[in-house]
Amino acid sequence: MDTNKLITRAKSILLTPRTEWPVIAAEPESIGGLFTGYILIMAAIPAVIRFLSASVIGVSVPFLGSYRIDIGTGLTIAVVSYVLTLIGVFVVALIVEALAPTFGGEKNRVQALKTVAYAYTASWVASIIGLIPGLTLIAALAGLIYGLYLLNLGLPFTMKCPPEKSIGYTVVTIISAIIVGIVLNLVIRSVGGGYGMGLNHGLSGLAAPHGGPAGSFANGSAAAGLQDWAKRMQDASKQVDAAQNSGDADAKANAVGQLVGAALGGNGKVVSLSPDRIKPFLPDTLDGLKRTQASAERNAALGVQISKATASYSDGANHTLNLEITDTGSLKGLVGFAAGWGGVEQESESDTGYEKTYKSGNQLIHEKWNKQSQSGEYGVVIADRFSVAVTGNAASIDELKQAAASIDVSGLAALKNDGVSAN
Image (cartoon, rainbow, N blue to C red):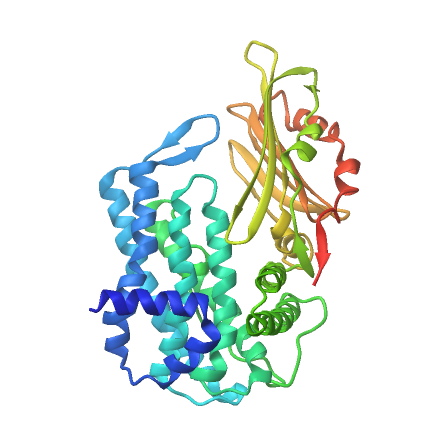
């Protein structure tokens, strides 16, 4: 294994994908060579990160502190997830190969494996950021989104499909990947009790839609939304190419920002609220309890901005509530996806309580209540951008709902377009 070559390839596919994909497509390779020279090493990164997070650093549990699983279980989870990642990469390569003729491409298993392996590089590298507390979700989303961009960019070179058909090719591959991701996630959960792989590690098998590559999905469907997303990504990537050719540093930065905005599901670049603008939404009292702590911050990673304000409220005895207000900023488009055509509604109930996510009007609401501990959480998404969540112990879930209702949600909604600039 040539470590320097591996590092150079990873950097090149992430930083200069348009010039790297033609080089990759022209390289003579084999299935075994791709695995031993690249995939086996790169796919180990998230497995190692998962082990460190679960067994060394620990997982933060609200109200209880940090929880670490034992070394043996952590290693088992890491090894199983690693093996299933390798399986997933190969499975999706088979799917990419099988789909090639449908989208005007050429069937070639080695080229399909190249496509999948190098598109996965973004997720594998971004997983390193997950070691930083609070950035795990951002890292996963950023890696997934950039990986989808790499896939869409690479298919015309490796699978020789017409560029105008790569969007449909990418969409069907994404849907297939989600399905296999769910299956592999269930396998890992059965072994390790919940430490799943996430959608960015799996792949899987849907046939191409009837109507062929020239067809389209029904308006309002999830697949139609993905098609729209892919088209915005294609347009934004052209702006990045133009900016790179111009040599203008400001133009490059602006084009990349617009690319991130398109990738995250929005129609433009979003700058989240500054701490001094989101903190005033934390009231002095909440449901009759006095505020005992308050903080606000804005974080950024891989071009993604999120602002958050938190506060604790207490009666000085055993009654406490926690409030968290989040400006999803750059993730605004993904939130809109979930609240709109993402179909995230669900409900479950047990002897100890219930949990459900549902829509009420234009708002997405999440409730969770534990009858034994008399505690729970109530959250609501405002204007497809802001979330307000109240957690703590209470007489009933209605008390948490009442507390959330006292927040100035109309004031938040009025800021839904603040910091948003069109592409």
